[in-house]
Image (tube, rainbow, N blue to C red; front, top):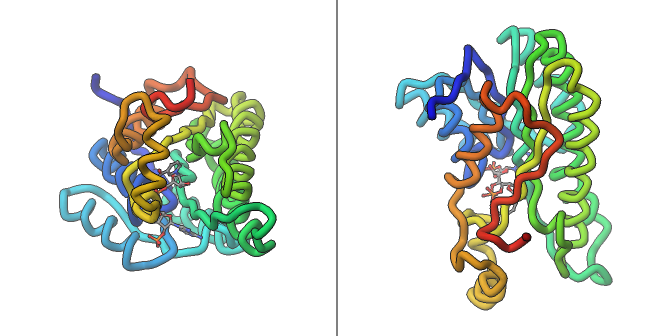
Amino acid sequence: MRLTFENRVAVVTGAGRGIGKAIALSLASEGVHLVCVSRNEASCGAVAEEIIASGGKAEALALDVGDSAAVAAAGKELTDRLGHVDILVNNAGITKDGLLLRMEDSAWEDVIRTNLSSCFYWTKALAYAMARKRWGRIINMASVSGLMGNAGQANYSAAKAGILGLTKSVAREFASRNITCNAVAPGFIETDMTSALTEEQKKAALANVPLKRLGKASEIATLTTYLCSEEAAYITGQVFTVDGGMVM
Ligand code: NAP
């Protein structure tokens, strides 16, 4: 099936590695102009260069997605300069795991700010311009941890569950402006985030995965690209689980 992307510009956060990089490359292969956002210039810069080298349009933007003022300024600069930003993929995320009784306030606050508040900041920064154009796609990267909870991830699960409520509220609030908002909830995907898990933790995780393997970043990117396309116009406020059957 051919997907339609008419002169679209996309901001993808956490595009320097893993799932975000796969999404950026996938959207770029559809002709979308990419703004690749990550913490480090080196990681988002390398992805933007890879897109340009293969004939696509891309630029890099290094900032902390949890910095409200920096995101607001970046949103204004991008919409002023490019004229439109049509697609927002809020994918940047971190983990700071620990059992609740030992979790420092800073681990709670950092994970909520980076994973959840960032989605609010970016949506606020770009939704007005999307609304004026009467077209927009917002995809928020959640997690099965936000659906099921996970011992040792109170902060991360709370942030990801918060993303689901934000997604549904944004979907309702902006539907009349032809902006859709959906969430993707990956299970265990092979990236730097999961390479930090011990073999024992991976084995325990896979015991609950009927398809008995980790997912690939490209498998999240394919669905996300579809949700960003013209063809997904009648889908909003939904959560799509891509987890090898872990949550049914
Ligand atoms: P990853 O490989 O660790 O990459 C994370 C990306 O986010 C990096 O590009 C990083 O920037 C960027 N980032 C982190 N904090 C940032 C900040 N404060 N400001 C700007 N950029 C920031 O992660 P991943 O596994 O691809 O995960 C991507 C998303 O999927 C996350 O939201 C994660 O929670 C979610 N998810 C992942 C899995 C999984 O199994 N991997 C499962 C469920 C959900 P730098 O490159 O500059 O460091």
